[in-house]
Image 1 (tube, rainbow, N blue to C red):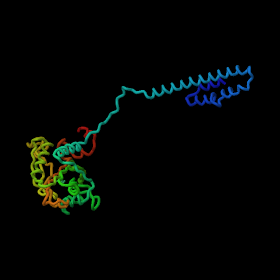
Image 2 (image 1 turned 45 degrees about the vertical axis):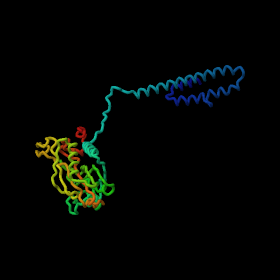
Image 3 (image 1 turned 120 degrees about the horizontal axis):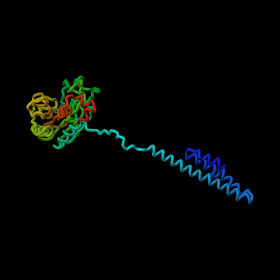
Image 4 (image 1 turned 135 degrees about the vertical axis):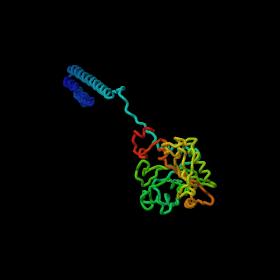
Length: 332
Ligand code: PHE
């Protein structure tokens, strides 16, 4: 019995197998146990002799089991250590850190300048109503920008906003006066992509409405803004223009921040760069938004963030901004 048991134990490969052998021989119903239980039936002479042998066998099996268990545990430990071995000389995995997109950087920079002047940020949905994007903004029904070939319509009432100006409408309808907000965001126009056009682009719009808001304040605000963004020597020039939602309206040029107005490739030799649309909020727009134009007045301005990003970082193709090519993005 001892010999079979010991050779069985030797062959065991796992702690569970050894344990089942322990039960088989030494357990309550095990073979040794049952021999010891039978001892009572033996004669007084036989008992000590058989008992001694049985106990020795039990001890031997017990020892064999313990050392086998120990051995198996050791093997397992070695295996684990070998498996978990760490080669500290291996090169580390490349860890890519994200960065802000250049448009986000410019948006943050511009927002910070206006926040510094007391503006707060307003946002609106990219899917807008035709009413907010055009009607309330005084765009006549036959205005070219309303054309199907210029605007992404979702249905007769909804479209992808073509400008951030509908945020003006939402703010004037819903907020208390006075208002002093900027609204950065995405806009969409039905344009074929080329170096200067993208069907998706970004604008930031400003709106100030209150008592005695004047054109002089508009000029002062924009002058301060462009000096902070392009440098203290930057000058502005207002050229008369026409927007449905402002009257009077202007396009605003700044002196080229590269050549300071001398003329260089950046400003196509002109010394000036157009960056903004602006004007005094049209009385019809105020009225459409429930504000009495006899009591209140306002100014608004809007600019293309993609264009300003391209100017500041000297990017010559707007499509680069949206291709998400890491070789391009990593330069910022
Ligand atoms: N929304 C105008 C545009 O898209 C820009 C603008 C905004 C002009 C506010 C005047 C006032 O061209």
